[in-house]
Image (cartoon, rainbow, N blue to C red; front, top):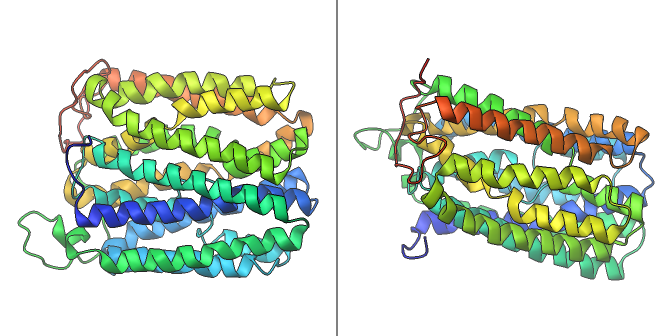
Amino acid sequence: MVGQALSRDSRLLVAGQAVRGLGYGFTAVVLGSLLATRGVSPMRAGVLLAALIAGSAAASLVVGAFGDRFGRRRAYGLFFAGIGLAGAVVATNPPMWVLFVVALTGTLSTDVVDNGAATTLEQVMLAVEDAGTSRVYGWYNAAGGAFGAIGALGAVVAGARSTGADVHAWLFAALVPVGLIGVVCAMGLTPAVEASGETPGGDGTATTGRARLGTSRKVVHHLAALFSVDAAGGGLVTTGFLSYYLSTRYGVSLATLGWLFFAVSALQAVSVLVAPLLARRYGLIPTMVGTHLPSNVLLAFMAFAPTFWLAVVLLLVRTSLSQMDVPTRQALVMKVTTPPERTAAAAATNAARYSVRPVAPLLGGVLQSVSMGAPLLVAGLVKGSYDVALWRWARRSSATGESARSSSPRHSKGTGEERP
Protein backbone atom coordinates (compact mmCIF):
# COMPACT_ATOMS: atom_id res chain seq x y z
CA MET A 1 0.00 0.00 0.00
CA VAL A 2 2.89 2.37 0.69
CA GLY A 3 4.94 1.48 -2.41
CA GLN A 4 2.93 3.45 -4.96
CA ALA A 5 2.68 7.23 -4.86
CA LEU A 6 -0.67 8.95 -5.10
CA SER A 7 -1.50 11.01 -8.18
CA ARG A 8 -1.74 14.82 -8.02
CA ASP A 9 -5.54 14.72 -7.94
CA SER A 10 -5.61 12.08 -5.23
CA ARG A 11 -3.19 14.12 -3.12
CA LEU A 12 -5.42 17.17 -3.44
CA LEU A 13 -8.51 15.14 -2.54
CA VAL A 14 -6.73 13.65 0.46
CA ALA A 15 -5.74 17.19 1.45
CA GLY A 16 -9.38 18.27 1.12
CA GLN A 17 -10.44 15.41 3.37
CA ALA A 18 -7.69 16.31 5.83
CA VAL A 19 -8.61 19.97 6.17
CA ARG A 20 -12.30 19.10 6.45
CA GLY A 21 -11.46 16.49 9.08
CA LEU A 22 -9.51 19.13 10.98
CA GLY A 23 -12.52 21.45 11.04
CA TYR A 24 -15.14 18.81 11.74
CA GLY A 25 -12.95 17.08 14.34
CA PHE A 26 -12.93 20.36 16.23
CA THR A 27 -16.53 21.50 15.76
CA ALA A 28 -18.18 18.09 16.26
CA VAL A 29 -16.80 18.05 19.80
CA VAL A 30 -17.58 21.72 20.39
CA LEU A 31 -21.14 21.24 19.11
CA GLY A 32 -22.09 18.77 21.83
CA SER A 33 -20.52 20.95 24.50
CA LEU A 34 -22.25 24.03 23.06
CA LEU A 35 -25.66 22.37 23.28
CA ALA A 36 -24.99 21.25 26.83
CA THR A 37 -23.79 24.75 27.80
CA ARG A 38 -26.94 26.31 26.35
CA GLY A 39 -29.04 23.87 28.39
CA VAL A 40 -30.60 22.28 25.30
CA SER A 41 -32.83 19.32 26.19
CA PRO A 42 -32.07 15.82 24.83
CA MET A 43 -35.08 16.03 22.50
CA ARG A 44 -34.10 19.40 21.01
CA ALA A 45 -30.48 18.27 20.70
CA GLY A 46 -31.76 15.20 18.86
CA VAL A 47 -33.78 17.36 16.48
CA LEU A 48 -30.74 19.51 15.67
CA LEU A 49 -28.54 16.46 15.06
CA ALA A 50 -31.31 15.05 12.87
CA ALA A 51 -31.31 18.27 10.84
CA LEU A 52 -27.55 18.02 10.37
CA ILE A 53 -27.85 14.48 9.04
CA ALA A 54 -30.87 15.30 6.86
CA GLY A 55 -28.92 18.16 5.31
CA SER A 56 -26.05 15.81 4.51
CA ALA A 57 -28.43 13.36 2.83
CA ALA A 58 -30.09 16.06 0.75
CA ALA A 59 -26.76 17.55 -0.35
CA SER A 60 -25.48 14.11 -1.33
CA LEU A 61 -28.58 13.45 -3.44
CA VAL A 62 -28.24 16.81 -5.21
CA VAL A 63 -24.59 16.10 -5.98
CA GLY A 64 -25.45 12.63 -7.23
CA ALA A 65 -28.12 13.96 -9.55
CA PHE A 66 -26.37 17.02 -10.94
CA GLY A 67 -22.70 16.86 -9.91
CA ASP A 68 -21.46 15.41 -13.20
CA ARG A 69 -23.35 17.98 -15.26
CA PHE A 70 -22.42 20.95 -13.06
CA GLY A 71 -18.82 19.77 -12.79
CA ARG A 72 -17.32 17.78 -9.96
CA ARG A 73 -14.57 20.31 -9.29
CA ARG A 74 -16.99 23.24 -9.22
CA ALA A 75 -19.40 21.35 -6.95
CA TYR A 76 -16.51 20.45 -4.65
CA GLY A 77 -15.34 24.04 -4.41
CA LEU A 78 -18.89 25.30 -3.84
CA PHE A 79 -19.35 22.86 -0.98
CA PHE A 80 -16.19 24.08 0.75
CA ALA A 81 -17.32 27.67 0.32
CA GLY A 82 -20.55 26.64 2.07
CA ILE A 83 -18.55 25.20 4.98
CA GLY A 84 -16.82 28.54 5.49
CA LEU A 85 -20.10 30.45 5.36
CA ALA A 86 -21.78 28.04 7.79
CA GLY A 87 -18.93 28.46 10.27
CA ALA A 88 -19.21 32.25 10.07
CA VAL A 89 -22.96 32.12 10.78
CA VAL A 90 -22.74 29.72 13.75
CA ALA A 91 -19.90 31.78 15.21
CA THR A 92 -22.37 34.59 15.92
CA ASN A 93 -24.21 32.30 18.38
CA PRO A 94 -27.54 32.66 16.54
CA PRO A 95 -30.89 31.45 17.89
CA MET A 96 -31.77 27.77 17.57
CA TRP A 97 -33.92 28.23 14.46
CA VAL A 98 -30.91 29.64 12.58
CA LEU A 99 -28.83 26.68 13.68
CA PHE A 100 -31.51 24.38 12.23
CA VAL A 101 -31.42 26.24 8.90
CA VAL A 102 -27.62 26.01 8.72
CA ALA A 103 -27.80 22.33 9.65
CA LEU A 104 -30.13 21.62 6.73
CA THR A 105 -27.57 22.93 4.21
CA GLY A 106 -25.42 19.82 4.74
CA THR A 107 -22.25 21.88 5.30
CA LEU A 108 -21.83 20.93 8.97
CA SER A 109 -21.19 17.41 10.20
CA THR A 110 -21.59 15.36 13.34
CA ASP A 111 -18.67 13.13 12.31
CA VAL A 112 -15.10 13.62 11.13
CA VAL A 113 -15.25 11.39 8.05
CA ASP A 114 -17.93 9.95 5.81
CA ASN A 115 -19.98 13.13 5.57
CA GLY A 116 -22.48 13.73 2.81
CA ALA A 117 -21.84 15.58 -0.43
CA ALA A 118 -18.07 15.96 0.01
CA THR A 119 -17.65 12.22 0.58
CA THR A 120 -19.75 11.45 -2.50
CA LEU A 121 -17.60 13.70 -4.70
CA GLU A 122 -14.29 12.54 -3.25
CA GLN A 123 -15.25 8.88 -3.42
CA VAL A 124 -16.02 8.99 -7.14
CA MET A 125 -13.08 11.26 -8.05
CA LEU A 126 -10.66 8.96 -6.21
CA ALA A 127 -12.05 6.02 -8.20
CA VAL A 128 -10.25 7.38 -11.27
CA GLU A 129 -7.06 6.07 -9.65
CA ASP A 130 -8.32 3.21 -7.49
CA ALA A 131 -11.75 1.64 -7.95
CA GLY A 132 -11.42 -1.65 -6.13
CA THR A 133 -8.45 -2.25 -3.84
CA SER A 134 -9.17 0.36 -1.11
CA ARG A 135 -5.49 1.47 -1.18
CA VAL A 136 -6.23 5.11 -1.98
CA TYR A 137 -9.32 5.07 0.24
CA GLY A 138 -7.16 3.92 3.13
CA TRP A 139 -4.91 6.98 2.84
CA TYR A 140 -7.94 9.20 2.24
CA ASN A 141 -9.76 8.13 5.39
CA ALA A 142 -6.55 8.04 7.42
CA ALA A 143 -6.00 11.70 6.57
CA GLY A 144 -9.48 12.52 7.82
CA GLY A 145 -8.92 10.58 11.03
CA ALA A 146 -5.46 11.99 11.70
CA PHE A 147 -6.44 15.60 11.14
CA GLY A 148 -9.71 14.99 12.96
CA ALA A 149 -7.55 14.01 15.92
CA ILE A 150 -5.68 17.30 15.67
CA GLY A 151 -9.02 19.11 15.51
CA ALA A 152 -10.21 17.32 18.63
CA LEU A 153 -6.94 18.25 20.32
CA GLY A 154 -7.75 21.85 19.45
CA ALA A 155 -10.93 21.43 21.47
CA VAL A 156 -8.74 20.63 24.48
CA VAL A 157 -7.07 24.02 24.24
CA ALA A 158 -10.35 25.77 23.53
CA GLY A 159 -12.04 24.01 26.45
CA ALA A 160 -9.30 25.14 28.83
CA ARG A 161 -9.83 28.77 27.85
CA SER A 162 -13.55 29.08 27.15
CA THR A 163 -16.71 29.17 29.19
CA GLY A 164 -20.25 30.03 28.16
CA ALA A 165 -22.28 29.52 25.01
CA ASP A 166 -21.06 32.73 23.34
CA VAL A 167 -17.43 31.60 23.44
CA HIS A 168 -18.28 28.06 22.37
CA ALA A 169 -20.17 29.39 19.35
CA TRP A 170 -17.30 31.68 18.35
CA LEU A 171 -15.08 28.60 18.00
CA PHE A 172 -17.02 27.69 14.84
CA ALA A 173 -15.16 30.50 13.07
CA ALA A 174 -12.45 27.86 12.60
CA LEU A 175 -14.49 26.57 9.66
CA VAL A 176 -13.87 29.77 7.66
CA PRO A 177 -10.21 29.00 6.82
CA VAL A 178 -11.17 25.35 6.34
CA GLY A 179 -13.58 26.41 3.62
CA LEU A 180 -11.03 28.66 1.94
CA ILE A 181 -8.32 25.99 1.85
CA GLY A 182 -10.83 23.50 0.47
CA VAL A 183 -11.71 25.89 -2.35
CA VAL A 184 -8.02 26.11 -3.24
CA CYS A 185 -7.76 22.31 -3.32
CA ALA A 186 -10.78 22.13 -5.63
CA MET A 187 -9.26 24.71 -7.98
CA GLY A 188 -6.09 22.62 -8.26
CA LEU A 189 -7.84 19.45 -9.50
CA THR A 190 -7.34 18.44 -13.13
CA PRO A 191 -10.05 17.62 -15.71
CA ALA A 192 -9.26 13.91 -15.24
CA VAL A 193 -11.56 13.79 -12.21
CA GLU A 194 -14.57 14.95 -14.18
CA ALA A 195 -17.13 12.51 -15.55
CA SER A 196 -15.78 12.96 -19.08
CA GLY A 197 -12.45 11.65 -17.84
CA GLU A 198 -14.11 8.32 -17.02
CA THR A 199 -16.36 7.83 -20.03
CA PRO A 200 -15.47 4.96 -22.38
CA GLY A 201 -13.34 6.19 -25.26
CA GLY A 202 -11.92 9.13 -23.27
CA ASP A 203 -12.82 11.69 -25.91
CA GLY A 204 -13.15 14.46 -23.33
CA THR A 205 -16.72 15.30 -24.26
CA ALA A 206 -18.82 16.96 -21.58
CA THR A 207 -21.30 14.87 -19.69
CA THR A 208 -24.88 16.03 -19.98
CA GLY A 209 -27.96 15.08 -18.04
CA ARG A 210 -28.14 13.29 -14.72
CA ALA A 211 -25.80 10.52 -13.66
CA ARG A 212 -27.74 7.25 -13.71
CA LEU A 213 -27.28 3.65 -12.72
CA GLY A 214 -27.24 1.02 -15.46
CA THR A 215 -26.33 -2.64 -15.19
CA SER A 216 -25.23 -2.23 -11.57
CA ARG A 217 -28.59 -0.89 -10.40
CA LYS A 218 -29.67 -4.05 -8.59
CA VAL A 219 -26.51 -4.55 -6.58
CA VAL A 220 -26.18 -0.83 -5.74
CA HIS A 221 -29.74 -0.72 -4.45
CA HIS A 222 -29.11 -3.84 -2.38
CA LEU A 223 -25.95 -2.36 -0.88
CA ALA A 224 -27.74 0.95 -0.27
CA ALA A 225 -30.44 -0.88 1.68
CA LEU A 226 -27.84 -2.71 3.77
CA PHE A 227 -25.82 0.45 4.41
CA SER A 228 -28.95 2.26 5.52
CA VAL A 229 -29.41 -0.27 8.33
CA ASP A 230 -25.86 0.37 9.54
CA ALA A 231 -26.39 4.12 9.27
CA ALA A 232 -29.64 3.94 11.24
CA GLY A 233 -27.67 2.58 14.16
CA GLY A 234 -24.77 4.95 13.57
CA GLY A 235 -27.09 7.95 13.72
CA LEU A 236 -27.66 7.17 17.38
CA VAL A 237 -23.97 7.44 18.26
CA THR A 238 -22.45 10.30 16.23
CA THR A 239 -19.53 12.29 17.64
CA GLY A 240 -21.96 15.08 18.47
CA PHE A 241 -24.17 12.68 20.42
CA LEU A 242 -21.26 11.05 22.25
CA SER A 243 -19.94 14.47 23.23
CA TYR A 244 -23.37 15.46 24.55
CA TYR A 245 -23.91 12.08 26.25
CA LEU A 246 -20.56 12.01 28.04
CA SER A 247 -20.93 15.65 29.11
CA THR A 248 -24.41 15.04 30.50
CA ARG A 249 -23.96 11.61 32.11
CA TYR A 250 -20.47 11.94 33.54
CA GLY A 251 -20.13 15.73 33.78
CA VAL A 252 -16.81 15.85 31.92
CA SER A 253 -15.35 19.10 30.59
CA LEU A 254 -14.79 20.17 26.99
CA ALA A 255 -11.04 19.80 27.52
CA THR A 256 -11.46 16.18 28.64
CA LEU A 257 -13.70 15.48 25.67
CA GLY A 258 -11.10 17.03 23.39
CA TRP A 259 -8.43 14.63 24.63
CA LEU A 260 -10.79 11.69 24.28
CA PHE A 261 -11.82 12.46 20.72
CA PHE A 262 -8.21 13.19 19.83
CA ALA A 263 -7.46 9.59 20.79
CA VAL A 264 -10.57 8.37 18.95
CA SER A 265 -9.59 10.10 15.72
CA ALA A 266 -5.98 8.95 16.00
CA LEU A 267 -7.13 5.35 16.34
CA GLN A 268 -9.42 5.82 13.34
CA ALA A 269 -6.49 7.04 11.27
CA VAL A 270 -4.42 3.98 12.12
CA SER A 271 -7.25 1.50 11.63
CA VAL A 272 -8.24 2.72 8.16
CA LEU A 273 -4.62 2.31 7.06
CA VAL A 274 -4.62 -1.27 8.33
CA ALA A 275 -7.94 -2.06 6.62
CA PRO A 276 -6.56 -2.25 3.03
CA LEU A 277 -3.87 -4.67 4.20
CA LEU A 278 -6.51 -6.94 5.73
CA ALA A 279 -8.70 -6.56 2.65
CA ARG A 280 -5.86 -7.61 0.38
CA ARG A 281 -5.39 -10.76 2.46
CA TYR A 282 -8.96 -11.69 3.34
CA GLY A 283 -11.22 -9.73 0.96
CA LEU A 284 -13.26 -6.55 1.29
CA ILE A 285 -16.38 -8.00 2.90
CA PRO A 286 -14.64 -10.34 5.38
CA THR A 287 -12.62 -7.33 6.53
CA MET A 288 -15.76 -5.23 6.86
CA VAL A 289 -17.73 -7.77 8.86
CA GLY A 290 -14.86 -9.29 10.83
CA THR A 291 -13.93 -5.93 12.35
CA HIS A 292 -17.29 -4.18 12.45
CA LEU A 293 -19.28 -6.84 14.31
CA PRO A 294 -17.01 -7.05 17.38
CA SER A 295 -16.92 -3.25 17.54
CA ASN A 296 -20.71 -3.15 17.79
CA VAL A 297 -20.71 -5.60 20.69
CA LEU A 298 -18.37 -3.23 22.53
CA LEU A 299 -20.64 -0.30 21.65
CA ALA A 300 -23.61 -2.02 23.28
CA PHE A 301 -21.55 -2.68 26.42
CA MET A 302 -20.82 1.06 26.74
CA ALA A 303 -24.43 1.57 27.81
CA PHE A 304 -23.68 -0.25 31.06
CA ALA A 305 -20.40 1.48 31.89
CA PRO A 306 -20.76 2.78 35.48
CA THR A 307 -17.79 5.17 35.24
CA PHE A 308 -16.44 7.55 32.63
CA TRP A 309 -13.09 5.80 32.40
CA LEU A 310 -14.64 2.40 31.72
CA ALA A 311 -16.73 4.02 29.00
CA VAL A 312 -13.53 5.51 27.58
CA VAL A 313 -11.80 2.12 27.43
CA LEU A 314 -14.74 0.52 25.66
CA LEU A 315 -15.01 3.43 23.22
CA LEU A 316 -11.31 3.35 22.34
CA VAL A 317 -11.19 -0.41 21.81
CA ARG A 318 -14.37 -0.17 19.76
CA THR A 319 -12.92 2.66 17.67
CA SER A 320 -9.82 0.65 16.79
CA LEU A 321 -12.13 -1.74 14.89
CA SER A 322 -15.22 0.20 13.88
CA GLN A 323 -13.78 2.35 11.07
CA MET A 324 -12.09 -0.40 9.07
CA ASP A 325 -15.27 -0.87 7.07
CA VAL A 326 -15.18 2.72 5.75
CA PRO A 327 -12.42 2.50 3.08
CA THR A 328 -13.44 -1.07 2.25
CA ARG A 329 -17.10 -0.05 1.85
CA GLN A 330 -16.18 2.85 -0.41
CA ALA A 331 -13.92 0.63 -2.52
CA LEU A 332 -16.63 -2.03 -2.74
CA VAL A 333 -19.16 0.41 -4.21
CA MET A 334 -16.67 1.58 -6.83
CA LYS A 335 -15.66 -2.02 -7.58
CA VAL A 336 -19.14 -3.31 -8.39
CA THR A 337 -20.04 -0.41 -10.71
CA THR A 338 -18.91 0.72 -14.15
CA PRO A 339 -17.16 4.13 -14.47
CA PRO A 340 -20.16 6.07 -15.87
CA GLU A 341 -22.30 4.85 -12.96
CA ARG A 342 -19.97 5.75 -10.14
CA THR A 343 -21.27 9.20 -9.24
CA ALA A 344 -24.83 7.89 -9.12
CA ALA A 345 -23.72 4.83 -7.15
CA ALA A 346 -21.74 6.86 -4.61
CA ALA A 347 -24.65 9.27 -4.20
CA ALA A 348 -27.20 6.46 -3.86
CA THR A 349 -25.25 4.57 -1.20
CA ASN A 350 -24.18 7.67 0.72
CA ALA A 351 -27.65 9.25 0.57
CA ALA A 352 -29.19 5.96 1.71
CA ARG A 353 -26.98 6.10 4.76
CA TYR A 354 -27.95 9.67 5.52
CA SER A 355 -31.64 9.44 4.60
CA VAL A 356 -32.37 7.14 7.54
CA ARG A 357 -30.03 8.78 10.03
CA PRO A 358 -32.17 11.87 10.79
CA VAL A 359 -34.69 9.61 12.52
CA ALA A 360 -31.99 8.16 14.77
CA PRO A 361 -31.21 11.27 16.86
CA LEU A 362 -34.95 11.80 17.38
CA LEU A 363 -35.25 8.21 18.55
CA GLY A 364 -32.14 8.74 20.65
CA GLY A 365 -33.84 11.62 22.45
CA VAL A 366 -36.81 9.38 23.24
CA LEU A 367 -34.57 6.51 24.34
CA GLN A 368 -32.61 8.81 26.64
CA SER A 369 -35.81 9.70 28.46
CA VAL A 370 -35.88 6.02 29.46
CA SER A 371 -32.16 5.55 30.05
CA MET A 372 -29.18 7.74 29.17
CA GLY A 373 -27.28 4.78 27.72
CA ALA A 374 -30.17 3.22 25.81
CA PRO A 375 -29.12 4.68 22.41
CA LEU A 376 -25.76 2.91 22.72
CA LEU A 377 -27.39 -0.46 23.32
CA VAL A 378 -29.88 -0.06 20.48
CA ALA A 379 -27.16 1.17 18.12
CA GLY A 380 -25.01 -1.88 18.84
CA LEU A 381 -27.89 -4.24 18.13
CA VAL A 382 -28.94 -2.52 14.91
CA LYS A 383 -25.42 -2.21 13.52
CA GLY A 384 -24.66 -5.81 14.47
CA SER A 385 -27.70 -6.98 12.49
CA TYR A 386 -26.31 -5.13 9.46
CA ASP A 387 -23.03 -7.06 9.74
CA VAL A 388 -24.85 -10.38 9.78
CA ALA A 389 -27.05 -9.39 6.82
CA LEU A 390 -24.05 -8.20 4.77
CA TRP A 391 -22.23 -11.46 5.39
CA ARG A 392 -25.24 -13.51 4.36
CA TRP A 393 -25.67 -11.45 1.18
CA ALA A 394 -22.00 -11.79 0.23
CA ARG A 395 -22.11 -15.57 0.56
CA ARG A 396 -24.76 -15.87 -2.13
CA SER A 397 -23.82 -12.94 -4.40
CA SER A 398 -21.42 -12.97 -7.35
CA ALA A 399 -21.53 -9.20 -7.90
CA THR A 400 -18.61 -8.41 -5.59
CA GLY A 401 -16.10 -10.54 -7.46
CA GLU A 402 -15.24 -12.30 -4.19
CA SER A 403 -16.97 -14.74 -1.93
CA ALA A 404 -17.42 -14.04 1.74
CA ARG A 405 -14.41 -16.23 2.38
CA SER A 406 -12.23 -14.80 -0.42
CA SER A 407 -8.57 -14.20 0.41
CA SER A 408 -7.63 -12.19 -2.71
CA PRO A 409 -10.28 -9.79 -3.98
CA ARG A 410 -10.08 -9.19 -7.71
CA HIS A 411 -10.25 -5.76 -9.27
CA SER A 412 -13.53 -5.81 -11.10
CA LYS A 413 -16.05 -3.31 -12.37
CA GLY A 414 -18.84 -5.75 -11.78
CA THR A 415 -21.93 -6.41 -13.79
CA GLY A 416 -24.52 -5.76 -11.14
CA GLU A 417 -25.90 -9.27 -11.58
CA GLU A 418 -26.62 -11.57 -8.66
CA ARG A 419 -27.17 -15.24 -8.47
CA PRO A 420 -30.79 -16.22 -7.97
